[in-house]
Length: 113
Length: 113
Image 1: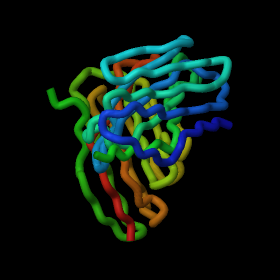
Image 2: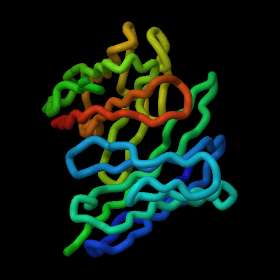
Image 3: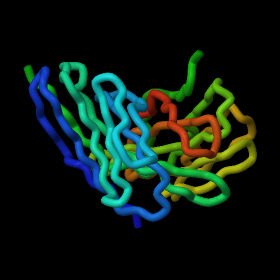
């Protein structure tokens, strides 16, 4: 089976840096996505990693280590609007050239003044 | 550009009733999917389609039917609603069956009494 773990909740201060970790144990791994979901809204795409290393996109960075089954999302210069749930999703090959996303349970981040 | 459009936004059903959740996308995406999101469970894949006339089951397909007669539309049918189907449902699409980001609709909050 597939197992994706991330912390349930985190709290950080405005202006600070926060790291949200995701570990996975899956078969047929083909990359890892991070999504942001504000309360009552749809998930929106943040980042995608398929090779080991760091991908930087503005205030957000994402890291992947395939050998360790580990990823993290790094948020810098936190703003109040960053309060949201962050979803880790593993891309798995399901046959016939198709890939499916399996999601972790999400990490609810609260940014406080 | 509307993206992925879901209707209705809210729905209340009685146990045993049937209904169809509508999903349409105007991005000419080949791949469409349905997820449900429950507290503490994360997003779980119900059904997906890699093109018109092709559908397949995800992780939690029981109690749901889908069809894909056109590229644009991917309705989800509940044949006999049960309280266990109370959830938020998201439709999502991407360009093709390959490993790319998903675009989500705004969701349908369904309550089954």
